[in-house]
Length: 103
Image 1 (cartoon, rainbow, N blue to C red):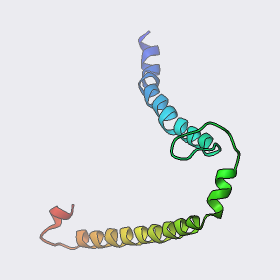
Image 2 (cartoon, rainbow, N blue to C red):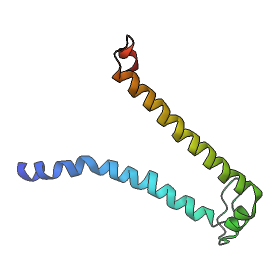
Image 3 (tube, rainbow, N blue to C red):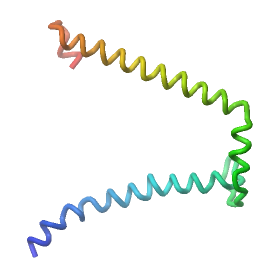
C-alpha cells in the first residue's frame, strides 16, 4: 500500500491544480470564443450569429488603430526592457557601491 501511495501521491497532489487550470484558463478561453460568435454587446446574449461580430470588428477603423497601438507599445516595451536589463547587467558587472541595492 505504501509503495502504491508513494507512486501516486504526486498525481493526487497535482490533480487540483490541473483541474483549476482546465476550468479557469481553458474553460474561460472556450467560453470567450463561444460568446464571440453570439450577438453580445455589454452582457452576453446566447443567440449564435456566426462571424458577424468579427466582420464588424475588421471593418471598423478602430481595429487598425488598435493594431498600430499594439505594435508601437509592444516594440517600445521590448526595447525599453532590453535597455534596462542591459544597464542593470552592466552595473552589476562593475564594482559599484550600490550593487546590493541593484541586486
